[in-house]
Structures are given as structure tokens and as C-alpha cells.
Amino acid sequence: MRALALDLDGTVYRGSEAVTGAVEALDRLFRAGCHLRYATNNSAAQPSAVAAKLQGLGIPCEPVWVYGTGPLTARYCASQSHTRVFCLGEPGLKETLSDSGIELSDDGASAVVVGIARQATYADLATAARLIRAGAEFIATNRDATYPLEEGKLEPGAGALVAAVEVASGRAPVTLGKPETGLVGWILDDLQVRPEDLLVVGDRLDTDIECGRRAGCPTWLTLTGVEDELPAGQPGGATLMELADSLLGR
Ligand SMILES: [Mg+2]
Image (cartoon, rainbow, N blue to C red; front, side):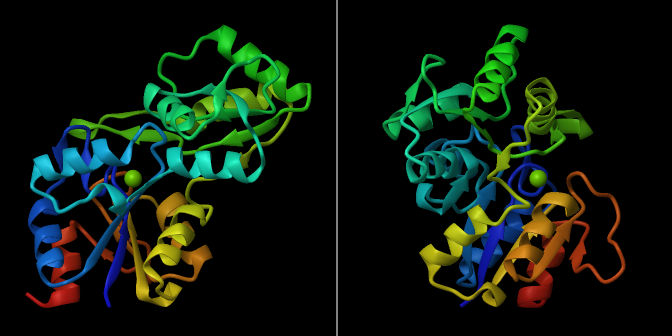
């Protein structure tokens, strides 16, 4: 069985546009019987919305193929018995947490969840830091420094806000997204495949490729996002078309 864990931002799309080669390559891989799974550090991404977006671009996807740090954070909170958390995040992350039964409040919160939060204010930062200093667990959905958009634009990612909370609270977070192995481990469990049989594909060395390495999976770097050259010895190519060619032949 061929299984792929594909990053989304910068790997499959940038903003609302598919990256060069992604539609044709993923269609070819799917038709050849590859299991496509999508692993995104974007905590605002909800599986149903991601699947609808990919389908709209002509890319094969079902909601259950999407693994994001929002649902991963909900699972982690449940495992740590956090029933009330303060969340610095986009509406998508807040909805994911409240849909899983977690109450969102700063009053008596046992954890502070920080993801990308474009509407965050100085007051939110102050609340997060105060709760963490008082003993709440500090949970970062991910620490990506930047977030790739259309036309090569890079905006500040969740990592920029996580760093602000870290400085203000004096505490380091537990980080759930890539390069940590939670998302990939979840895919391995669901597919029941060995790490060596899951190819981890992404556009960032410090998150996607490092995650694959830590999980014991082979990796493939695409140059459609953050990185613009292949380090010596790193499998990869300019676009996902080279990946389809290397797995399926031309
Ligand atoms: Mg990416």
C-alpha cells in the first residue's frame, strides 16, 4: 500500500489557489490507488471545510482524510482532562474545541491554547500570560513562524503569537503540530501502516520534513512553498508532479 501524509499550505495550495502541479499530481496518485491523507498545522482548518476546498480545486479529499492541529488539540485536551480552556485562535479552532465539549473561558481555565489568531489583542496576550503564570498548561497548536499565501506572500504564523505568550509568561509550551509527531502518528494508527510505508510530504524542512524524520517515515520536500532549494540528500522536487513521476513513472 502506498500512503502519503501531505502538508496543505504551500504544498497543495497557497491561500485559495492550488500550487503548480498539485491538481494533476494528486489526481494521478489517487487514481493509481495511493492513500492520500492531509496533515496540516493550521489550527483553524476544519476537516469538512478543507475537504470542500480541495474538492472545489479538483483534488481528491474526504473529510476523514484531513488531520489538523485543531482536532489534535481537542484530543490532547481530552487526554489531559482540560474541560475549560482559554483559547487564542481563529473561529475554526474555537469551534473545533467547543464541538468536542470543551468550554472556552478565561475563568478557571486549566489550559491556554494558542494557535494562529489574527484578531488577537494585547488584552488576550495579557490574559494568556496571567493564566499560565498562575499554573494553566500552555498548549501551542504549532509554532510555524510564517504562513504562506498567494503570490509568494508570507504572513506571521502561529509561532509568532506563541513566542509572544512565551516571553510574556516566562514558560515554554507543549507543542502539538509538526515537527512533533502527533498528526503523523494519528494517520499511522488510522491507516494501520508502518512508518516506513508512509511518505511525509511538505514544503518546510523545520516542520514537515523534521516531523517525518522523527516519526521514522520517508520524506519528500516540494519547492512550491517556503523552501526554494533541496538540501543535499533530501528527496524532493520543484512541484508534486515530480513526486507523481517518481512514484508512478512518467
Ligand atoms: Mg506548509
